[in-house]
Image (tube, rainbow, N blue to C red; front, side, top):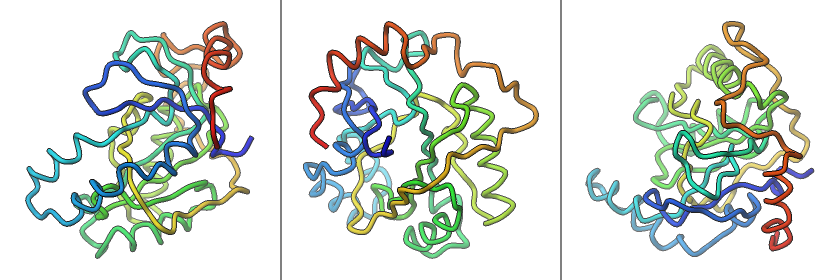
Length: 218
C-alpha cells in the first residue's frame, strides 16, 4: 500500500478528545491551515507562536485512535513512525530546509516536510515491526545522531504523539522507501508499545475500516 493511503487519526486541535480517521494524504494535502501556518512562521515571539500553533489540526501518525489519545484508550498501530527534528535542538544547521536536506539522505525516509514553524522538519518511516515502536525509535535516534549529528525529539517514542499540520511546497516523497528494520537491542522485539494495542485485522480494525475508510478522498 502507498504510504499516503495509510489510515491515521486527525484531531481538530491538541485539546480535542475525539478524532476522525482519514488517509495520510488527506491530512498532508489539506490547505485549510496554510494561512495560519504562514502567520506562525512570521511571528518572532515564542509564546505567541505556541499559542497560534495550538489552533492547528493535528494527527496521530502511528495510531488509529478516534476515541481519544489517553493512555488507556484503545488504538491500532498504523505501521508508521514520525520523527520530529527541531531547529533549537540542532543549532549547527541554519534552517529547517538544511535539516530536511540532511534527513532525506536516510534511504528509508518515505516522507519529509518542513515543520509548522519552518525552523525544523519531520520525517515519516514505515516500520518492519510496528509492535516494537519504541525499539525502532531508539534505533532511529541513535542512527541520526551517529550518521548525521542530528538530535531527534525524544517524545516521538510515544505511539500517540501528536503531529501538527504543516505546509511545504516541495515535500520529499520516496514511494520506493523500504521499511526501517533496525530495532534497538535493549528492547524486546515481541513487546507491544502498550497493552492497549490492537493488531490490524482485529474487530476494532474491521470496525474502523467499515465506518471510515470508504470515506477517503485521496
